[in-house]
Length: 491
Ligand code: ADP
Ligand code: ZN
Ligand code: MG
Image (cartoon, rainbow, N blue to C red; front, side, top):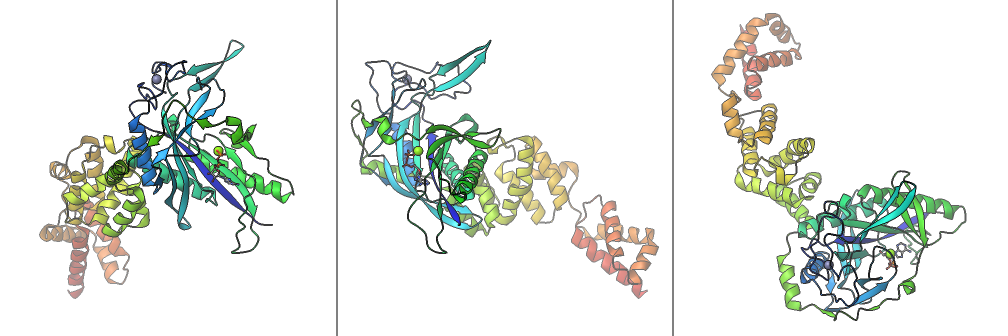
């Protein structure tokens, strides 16, 4: 029997607000800050304290919900999700349950199979928990609690079970990260845990081609994946394992799993709890959240052009390949850089600028570990370099060297070319002289060419370029070579 994978995703994204969700404590980089230094009575769960909602967190949540084409609820309700854990000092997490901030959205993903729309089920606000560090020292085992992260605003984004492969899951996660970064609500710094992904995976039989059963198989959930690689591997691993179980006539048990990064296997954390276990009830310390239509409209108009729309526009407006456009829009700062460069030199083909960015410039940036913010080559300077190439003032090889120098020093292309005397020689008279010298130096090769050995032309061409230290305009060299060889023949 054939099985198809059915996958739904829950993503937790920390919102990069200045202060926490329900108190005035700052949101800090927990990897860089002394433990428990950004904590107050509210976020440490002291009795008698009251939460106050952070408006910026709601705004950020709305930005994401609108970017995902969701319907915004005019009223939403905060709820208590009750459970005990040492990283949760109140004994409950304030979340949203029956009435989330937003529902029913969509996102288009692009994979090797083409485009596909993934339905978004819900987007809701909640608060993050603290962080536990398990220590084993001197034969003792204990756990340290850091509450700096407790109460940091979190947005949970849940999809319908619309994915059918690990590739689709990865494409969605990457696209969602890009959207969050475009919106400026999350750094996308996955090693720091600001974006955690939880795939739910099941298999179901494919009954016949074209016929899709409506029922879903039993799913497992993998918790807290914080890299695309781990996500893709964990999903692929589960699809494989469940297929083996089902083919052997066994059943899948509904469990919550973790991912063992080193062994590349999933491990059971707990048998799936049900929603009843949390005893959700409306948070009595917060009123319903009313979101005014005017505010929503204002946020909607303030949204930047999003990656997918920009991909399509760049592709069409500048006649870029899918591949190049995708590379450029992955980071908003790079897409901006490209368009600034194009604006700076409208006479230069945008396609050439795009190719120089996605090829040579990306190569230099990767090598040096520099991102767009740290880049010393200004957009106009890059456009200036590409202009010199397209005008034939320098050739590709020279341009590469010049760019490397621009990258290191921040100098402009023209300055470097002048200073180093790298300008391409297009002066036909000078080139004619070089060709003449080479033909005089290699009479045998010239004769061989004239007797029909066409391949020798490349050798002669190489010699001329060598004499010109690579700076001669290659088209003129070839033309001049042909001309002078024809003259010798006529003699
Ligand atoms: P929770 O996991 O918190 O109980 P849900 O039941 O709403 O929440 O499901 C969470 C995610 O699991 C959603 O993305 C949903 O699409 C997905 N999901 C639900 N059932 C299945 C299934 N049988 N197979 C794969 N994914 C599923
Ligand atoms: Zn606090
Ligand atoms: Mg879940």
